[in-house]
Length: 591
Image (cartoon, rainbow, N blue to C red):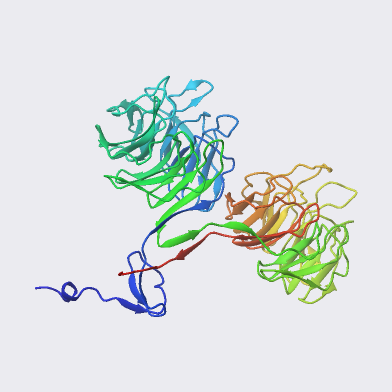
């Protein structure tokens, strides 16, 4: 007997808004738009956070939210650098044992294998496995070669093709201990992309004498079989996915390509282009959620591919409204849509409020000064310290500034965190001494009391968080002029400081925003445009600033930050917006 569903079909929901949460395949009638809608996949590449440093001919493994890049060439020499991607940015992993480029890799971020490659010593037969923190040398390949392809896991891998002193078709299988000869590729080639597993692998594209090829072969664990060729023959391309759901992108033919193609087990289909055409890049992920990174020459570019109704908008910095008064060494507080900028070098007393679009002039500070610190919100802010080792503290109520209790230790280039009634000031230095200070003071709204000392001393660092969960990032210790910047990070618990995860690169005169477990640090003397995120344990890269700046003000959150002014004095403002994901419905048209 037939069911009602078989006779009459499925009932379509009648909704005034998109379903939340959405599910792929959902169909409904949108009563506000008077249209039948559905959640269907949309394929697109979007910018991801840059690598640090950039790498070409690196090896890739893992997924879009847990990717791995290892080795390669940084534009100067072969590299041992390993970087891990968490879906938002890159963080440093454990170094490889041997620097080389032109390797291949397979597996996951916490269980990967990389093999082959080349360095000044020639073609390599080395293989190393990664456990998420360190690399261990394992059994060597039988044939030393570079520009190799691979598929599988860290304990069940197939490596194929490559270059000795000529292109080869060698295929070898790894069992977790050693390599054994397997069935050779039908087509001799190098710079080939790989996807799939040891018993269901895929080799696509590559180069053999005088030819950029689109030849595709599948592997069943014992032999290679010719499949439908790619639409565009090329080498030095990235690849990922499964034998029946694979993706390749970039490469050269011989000029750099931006093209991407997906494979369904029988044929290749052109997809959306990468934003940046490049060869010698690496890849990770699947045919629906891919990651492309690096490229020649030592590029840092990262792009994410998504084929989903969830449209990803990459995080980015964008120009904001200009300050009314050009300045440097100012302080700031508040949020991206309710911000405050005040003071500046050497004795600027201007105050301006930001509404997310433009700055407006407000009542001045009582004591003009630069190189102090600020914290709080737009309607309840604090400024303290400053040039000439000032102790002056002022409270802002959204209209005017009022003098408050003085710091016990006068200083400049200190950092701050917290609110008007529960604040924190730490570090800095007091001329004529050029040594950084360890002094931490807690603010209760009207007076300061001594808190736990920093270790080591510091000045010109970034601060954010609260009085009982503050974060100090980077800074310098002593040796003016030109004191050395550091990677030191310290976390405050309301009574004492402890060491946190180190920054990716040393910096000073940088700024910070967010909380102790969700922070950004950006700009500064040393790294200019770099932007790093902190999750309470480790740092990873974020999209870079458009303008490198130092001695500026920064505030906000880790997904909505502000940077304003510069040195020399400037009025420029940049706004950072973190990555967002939006459910996007498609209208169903019966015409």
